[in-house]
Image 1 (cartoon, rainbow, N blue to C red):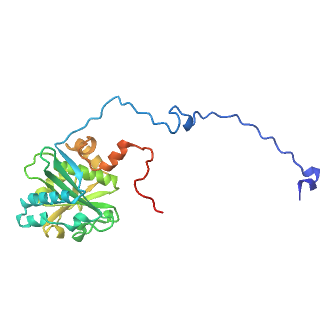
Image 2: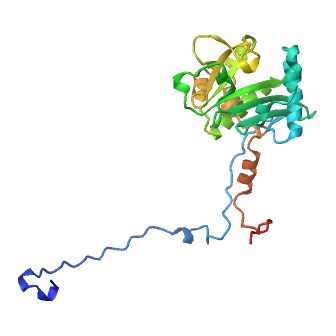
Image 3: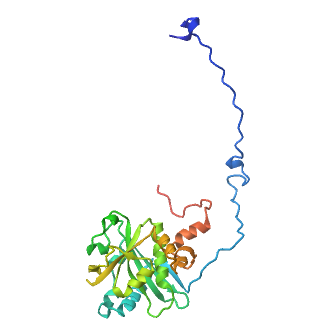
Length: 278
């Protein structure tokens, strides 16, 4: 039925729509004080400089064969002091070094150029950890993205906080890659060192576990929670708290590519150097 066919009694007058006052929402983004959208962004003026804590060495990520060979030589020297019969094996090629979920950090002395420390971090993103060949993880840790730190070594006689810097590098790396915690196997002689670095007993009962990837020797299995380690260290007023969690160390340069992109900022698109497919 059309409106013309309706009887007059059924025709109800429609109320007039009230005109709403125009609201002012301020300047639009393209009318802002910054000028046009194509104009360069203004530079912020800092009233204070960032305090940088310099180290006598620089921590980086192994990216080529030459660096890996230097790390292998350090492993042979460092582990050879305690395990002379296995020194040669530590200095030889290790297949684990080349897995896609493995990252190797190394510290290089600024004055001499020598490799003075190294640590290897392997995640369980695509394969179980080496330590899982010997122990079964507690139920609370199953299904989590975890990592294992191995081959943590320092040049004998090098009296600098290399080991602490390597742990800080691994901590920053784990946060950036969403790794929830780090496992480590420790001999009795190194327990105090790992505990000072924030590791605790994984099982809580002090058991020693023979580890297949460590020659079957008994080790304490330790764990360091990526999320809670900062709060725990702060609560205990750990002497290394500032170094690991607060101080800015530009020499721990494990995100160089990201840092370069951040400092360069967004730039106008340049013609691609690569030929386009037809």
